[in-house]
Length: 182
Image (tube, rainbow, N blue to C red):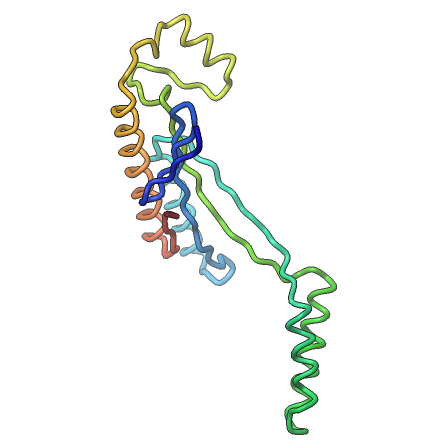
């Protein structure tokens, strides 16, 4: 089965595993006062404590290649009036120094929410270790009742929608922009 993505961004993977991805636009904590920083951390902690689904926080860092841009600035600076040429040279030199140190980076922050069929059953116990989880289910008899596929999907979608609303609302309350990917 190929992964399926709904219009609102819920991803269904094989084996009734469901995911939702939220992109988070970071803020510069160094610019916040001590009180603001404390409030953000408390809000973040409270948001995490109220999550009922598994989550992964992913930070993707990409080095930016702007050599072509710098070369274009250098070539265009030759046609500028004499009073502007030094500024273009200074800008291209500064950008060149940033490129050499690879300090220009593009960062993307994501929260990945996860649920699957085994975590949807109320009586089921879910443990991160697959071996311990299998043993716990065999001893307790949990997870033996089979739900119809449409009921599994509905519960998973509802669970992920609730978690997404909690995350987006929590970040918004802290002054941080977050939006689900579709």
